[in-house]
Image 1: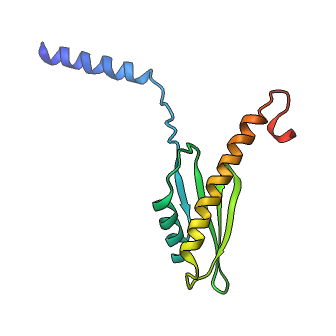
Image 2 (image 1 turned 120 degrees about the vertical axis):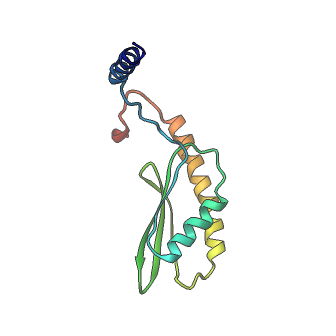
Image 3 (image 1 turned 180 degrees about the vertical axis):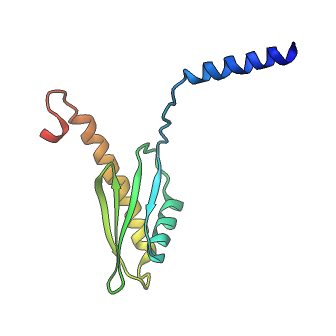
Length: 129
């Protein structure tokens, strides 16, 4: 009898769970790494260690490496390029580049948020302005 009741309870739970739909969970404030070289990974680690911002959007650090010239680093927020720099493999002025990237990224994010707040009109689509 107990076994039958436990099977009925399990079946009812499975049927009830089948009616539920998956809910997408959005994680705000991600800093994603799309670097491939050691200098790119070092830049990402140094930037992410020092990044402390209340910005809830996602940032992406991209890299286009070149064996001859170094790496082209871009930081994007919502598909908008907000910072670009060129890093040499010898790590010349590496810490200065990271500090400059942090300051300029914070300024660019603040400008994006101000623009979004001031230019949010419902009569124009985003691609029409």
